[in-house]
Image (cartoon, rainbow, N blue to C red; front, side, top):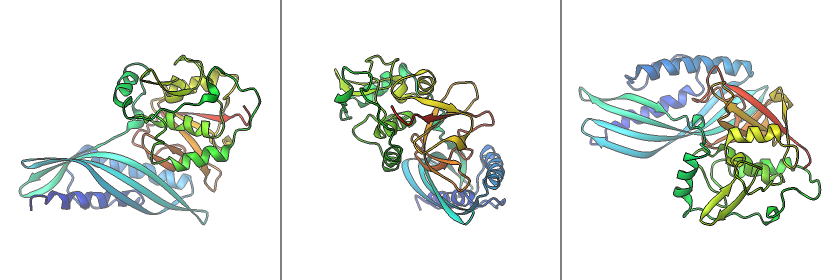
Length: 332
């Protein structure tokens, strides 16, 4: 009886799973007294209903696996950190589309008149967290310097430009993106805000040449452990810096901004500005297309595979969200 709260929690997980695909209003399977959450989820269901219809997609089923990462119990109150692995299946023009993503929540349960109820639900939206180029960088280096294995690309040392043009191997970039969508490559530093680091690794796997300058604010490079420090350029790991690099760089890794997502190809990049203020906070890479020719993307931070490019199902998304679409050059 000591963990009777788990019955309420498991009912909530089932309800969370049903909300992924069932657009109809439903009676709550478990009592939730967090009015803000109930209102937000009602608005989200309405948005997703319109989103599915605009994509000509019929949601069929969802499978949600929940993992309890942390539990803190007190008298009459329990705090639980949950990780959801969501696999959503839909039908579009007679074909099946499968999307996967990982999300985190913090759930607070309290005991009221002998029954457990959910008093608060907080959705993590790590895609909204900026990757600071100074303070967080220093913190990350301190946390990871003794745990990461160095990666050193000797082909870029002492040479900032390739000697011959080479093709961008889009299929290899996608293969890498698929291999590491839900786990980090141990040869690279893994960041708390990891989306741009992951995209850069995918581009590099596709043959994009590093532009090694030795200066963090210049070029696009990752060198590895140097003098007990991980050495990488801001454009390698910071979304806003990658956007600037794509916009201004004229040699090596080059990208052309296009106006519409249907102009993208496999291995191209989508950047996200959640607040519409010109500061980009999230990066993804195109790994597939739906039956309407619209890109599906992989990403880290909130690990995602074959997610619809516009992210309207993300807790980070807002009505002000703006995008940059970059077509990576076919040769370097």
